[in-house]
Image 1 (cartoon, rainbow, N blue to C red):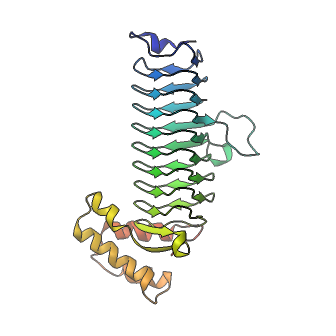
Image 2: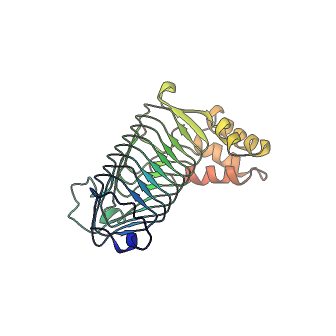
Length: 269
């Protein structure tokens, strides 16, 4: 059934083979392609495009100008044996591209009840975002990246192809994970981590930072922090104390220090 919001303007852009629940709210500017299924308690913002064969269940709230490609499954029940049908949620921001066969689960009660995806993200084919995960703005999940439940991916991070990420892991802002890397501990902000380097943080994501407009001074301070953490003979506690004693370390290094000190699973060094 066509939702009331979709009848406000014409022509409507809901394909006759699509099924839209009467309690779904679909903005009139949305395009809903062939054989899509939009369930109850789904809200689609302005300008969203569902190419074909897209399934969205609720409660799910989706912002504006998001694109969903064939056979992705959005807002489905969490893959958790303790889930008992509670009305948990998924919220997705604006201007995201979600490609073929992507799966994004709603939250669980024990995890806070909410899975979130920010804005301007690219989630490539066959990627999975597990229940209660938090994806920041401008992130990229490459083909087949798999996030267990309760994973946090901070802004501008890249999770490479075929990377499994353990539950409760945090992926730091502006970090880059090479393809095929199994992640079981927190990934440092600004770092490059790869299975080809024995799953170690082998340096700073300098190219990524330059592309995002980081000044030479900011990059230099982050580089100094990484040399202290990764290339000195100091252990982590000693390296942190040394960095905190430096008065001109800058906000980026403060972020790095806070990230390490708040880690519950330990960080990849």
